[in-house]
Image 1 (cartoon, rainbow, N blue to C red):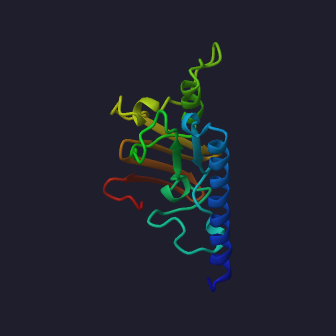
Image 2: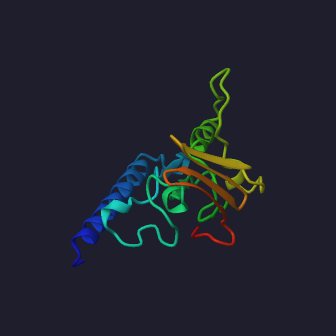
Length: 174
């Protein structure tokens, strides 16, 4: 890859892929791979400052924004014993769901007296439920707020002062 920035980015992706493979192989070598829930995700969309053009394309935005380019991330779950291979789930979920899902996978109960914001995703991924796990999803950083309900997303910003409303079904690029 002639471009240095793209070459470095590709090397990071290659390293990530290689090391995920090492983790999965480690589980397989110990006979744990079929009954271990493995989750891969990211904390935010790609960073705009790294210099890779169209990093989050077709979505607008990057890390530190609530445009889909900043909040839409990969989220893969692998658990051969309990989840269908190659299934695709299209509804919005939250990282808050990881804890509730892991508790359910382990057949454990939440800590006593604690209300969890996350949802157990297993019934959705196993085809037992077809409704959306969240009616609404919220984001907040200081005075920058966003909310999604169905296909609608509202962003409220202070710098610059503006309110933005998008129908993501009609305008996925915002």
